[in-house]
Image 1 (cartoon, rainbow, N blue to C red):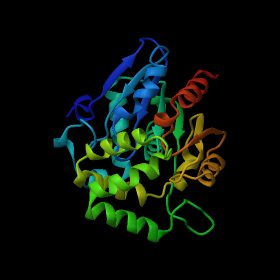
Image 2: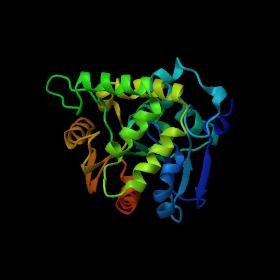
Image 3: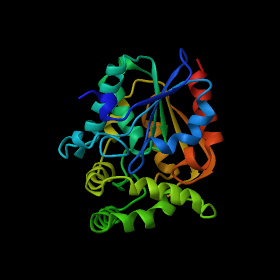
Length: 266
């Protein structure tokens, strides 16, 4: 199966410009990149896609074994770049897709130029001195709630993830994205996301890397951004004066500017 069909790949922006591959996080799809796309499309070639199991990806491609691990999603990213014959790609991964992008760059660094990790977390569960933001009990409860009532979970979690309580339109947009995702697929992706531990992979990232964090983020607190920065050699940490886990939706001006500045820098 061709990855362009499998992952509903779309290409926009200008030709013969630096390429940005935008990878969405859990429960989302490429539509949530719209505010950033509007701000970057005149200066970059933008490649967007839906992870299998999300958005308008091909339902026939779903494989619960493959997609029970973040490596399955990373393999898809590499295949997309091979099928499009793209190199020197700047990959921008949001949330769990920051680690998916990192894994893809480790698998085939020849295809990539730079890595932007937008509100990343290599592990959500606290472990010894490491603080991921959640206890094991928190994550077990989150996954149990998602398993029992995915739509109810989506309604409850969207405001927590998005932040910005004074902007309910943003919560509604994220909840609508969750609701477009097949619940069975979402349950598998959720376990792959919230039970993952990719801390040991950080040192293997060889690309120039920027971590973008928010001043207030309930899902990936600033201690996590500091940890990622500390463990990726030569990385850059940018802190946005923003609230929530999705600054590409809630503060697209600052997010797009940070991405553009980093990609253009030599």
